[in-house]
Amino acid sequence: VTLGKTGITVNKNGFGALPIQRIGREEAAYLLQKAYHGGITFFDTARFYTDSEEKIGYALHSVRDKIILASKTQA
Image 1 (tube, helix red, strand yellow):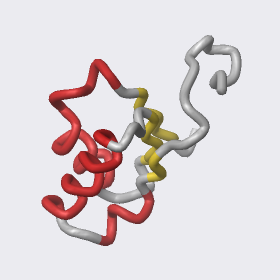
Image 2 (cartoon, one colour; image 1 turned 45 degrees about the vertical axis):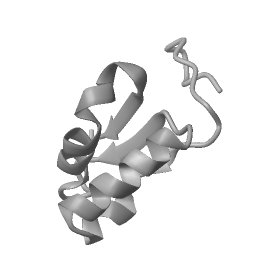
Image 3 (cartoon, helix red, strand yellow; image 1 turned 90 degrees about the horizontal axis):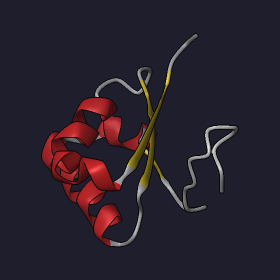
Image 4 (tube, one colour; image 1 turned 90 degrees about the vertical axis):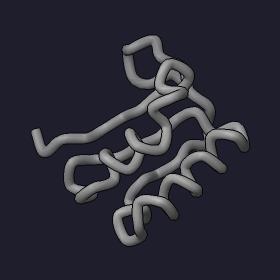
């Protein structure tokens, strides 16, 4: 799937990060890493999802060049 007019192509399956705001950092890291190792490379989050951006950064910093990360704003 191509994201709008960006030319960036992602898989149809992605990881929506809203639920990880409700769990601890280590559990979130475990889930995010399992998703990545299971083939998920598109991660969607938003500033509104409290600390999910922080948790994604913590969990996936070593593979940042291998994933697509989208973060929505209120703009």
